[in-house]
Image 1 (tube, rainbow, N blue to C red):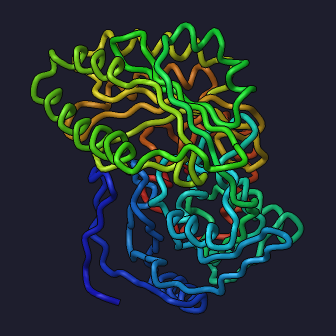
Image 2 (image 1 turned 135 degrees about the vertical axis):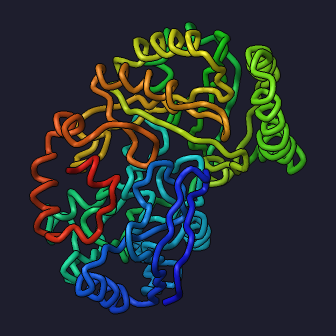
Length: 433
């Protein structure tokens, strides 16, 4: 244990001054940290890689890091089940799996998150047949607010398993996760420009025809960039290293970051920047290892809000979003990302019980965002939208409860597993009550 420490998230919009930081290296050490905090009447909060934009992981007491936690890594090639420490990052996990000829079935576009943080907030990729990353969890080990160690699966403590896979950090400390993996696979990525109305008209067939579909709409234009990823048998069209650096490193980070700074300094030029950016992105196709295709470097800092809505409501949501952007007294610098997921059965997953479309709104750090995000939140809420737990939103417990059929069950389980709200903070009190 060390003295008072300052913590902030990746985006730099959340900060905390924690009185103590703890880095246990065993599960027994985690239970001891939890029990010590309870005995002292203090709260304790796990922080991961800081990739949540909400204050969901902001410590309101002792700060617990799992970077030093070591549990046995177990790889069963017959069942394709892999057990790892919950504090491992997705990037490390992907390398571990590749070394054994395995992979996760799907990923988002960032791999810096810890496994615990990614699943606890409902982090997802895109693909009509795939739920959020938490749907790949086969079992987990949770340290509760009373210091009890629970091993959970669909057959062992199934109610805890149904809740804790997307548990918001409110039910306990995830210390170990068993993931259902697949044989390593290659993806063929195809990226192309298009017009928003054309893409929306063809969207049902597009989503059904490809393994993974997403598109980016450029504000102040009718232009989009469509990306599809499909499984193929061989890595026979790899992206040349220079092209990968040019497109994904230099243009997508260095140049785009410079354009954002220009737009922040000179807002009237933003529509022109958006139009030029949309037309500058051409068509390309390449193959690569699945995680290398799914994930991209992100060095330009931003804040983000993302809503999952019923898939059929997407055209309405986009039409309203375009009107919102045109009426704002400031400019939107980032394109809007649209993705798709399948229904799942995890209690507080935003995909619970329905196929979803996701709209992710971003703004460059240092530019106004709250009126933009709040205006779309009103639209999304009316459409039955559920906010991504790790991304900015202003919903409270009263507003969220009707959106989740299993909300009362989650609340009852939380009262049982963490009776003294040891793992809460002001944000969790706001969204859970």
